[in-house]
Length: 222
Image (tube, rainbow, N blue to C red; front, side, top):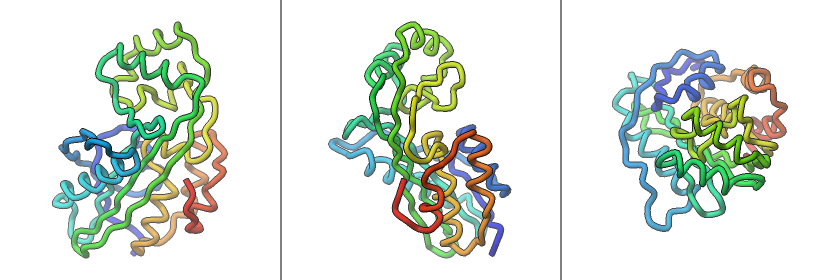
């Protein structure tokens, strides 16, 4: 099997864009689930739980032999989950809190083949260092409305605000879909190899990834 019938359990334009770089056809659906963190829930447990719930809810949309791809991403400051801001003031407070500091971005993906009753789960955790942007820059960015639907109140790929000074791992994962982890999962399910994936990803993002070889060789990094 080289060509999976993929169903992306997300309406995120960023995930759709990233997934398109694999060169595979896919359809999309959405998972209507409660994304409220449980009391005391750790960020890693949170993203794994949500990705699994999205996969389960969307399993019925997979064609026979098809694969559901579910993902969830969260920003974490230590054990604190930083979700999407409630409003513009909340976005401002989050950006001030993260400024000139390093936090973690965790993305979990779950690939499920309902017809075979099997699934593969991956977790990618990436340290992200924010730059020392000014109050004026925060105000200008918030005025665009871009932070409101983003975990952590920022988009790493925003060229005008460019909030991040350094990442130490998978850039695509911070955007919402770690492509090499996804490629590794597809290989585990028997769907061949797409060897160009890491190079397409790095070219599109203008980023030299330090971990893609380790990820694709099966190491527990990222």
